[in-house]
Image 1: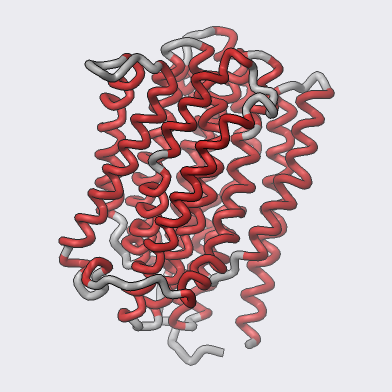
Image 2 (image 1 turned 135 degrees about the vertical axis):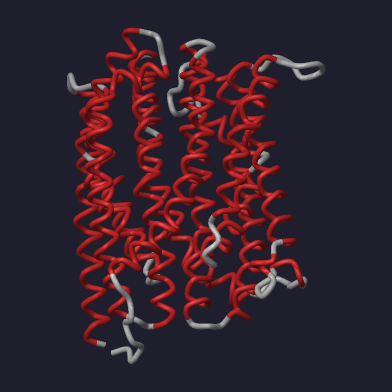
Length: 451
């Protein structure tokens, strides 16, 4: 049992959680907003452009989140070093994370160059192939920037400085619109690329974001004690192993969850453009709203990671309880928002009556899983802070790919449910993940309590 005093109050912990969560939430909304802008701008070109983007994004997002998800390991490692009062370790962790991020970014970029060859195998209609392929080739060029930005972001947020990342993300949101216009409609020597132009615009933006954050960290007073760029370090096998051991299961867990949502567009693609477009709208809406519990989960990882470093188990359990309670309140608010404003939300994306009606119907399924989604992501955030990542990885793989995916494919392709079948599969998967993750969290807490 830890001899560290648990001097903390509900008010203090809620204040700390929201102090971290709100800027992270703005950051998450901004980053999700990049995909939202692409979807809206492509939707105003044609249903074919929207469907091509749906397929391209459906393959890019899982790859991007797998590799940037691995770099989330930086957050609990830095938070633990901060809680254990070992600041000298923090700069080393951040430098080694950047090495790992650079190598992973190159690998991810190569994967996305090869990905278009899989499109015909996945049964993507021929009309969508040229634009979806060019989108994947282009967006892959930004992958090293994506992973290195994720490493620096984890370092900054774990130290309790989420605001610089928020400011950069908001700036990126503003910059994407003119960049998209240039590549979608052409300007000077740049040809008109339609929806595929979004890939080039996003890749350029990712590099601008990474360079801006690196410069801020280099010059910022808050980072002087743990300055990443003050010295040059070779790759250290010990830290690379620790980052990958902790990060790889995180990346895979995120990949298993997000890819089940993203590949749904591919499962539905033979059922026609209207269904795919409606599904893409519903997924885009729920992706935006998922940023709320996701931001809470990141804040929980930081707070719990710090107490884990201090070995303050009482305070750690208090943060977990408050986190799950907060997640419940936010999920209920989200359900009410979708229920009352479905027509207004869908009208932002499309003016096509048929697409809008199907999208509004699919959003009813999104309401059904909000609580389960909030609980499972909060539990995963708590476990991450305690550096337990392998168990959640296996749980998410079983819940989404062994259970949800076969159920969704069967209901969509072999029953009259069509698109709704995929969503029923998602609800089943999220429920299984939620129950298993909460059970695991309870057991680990019990073990630490009696240790």
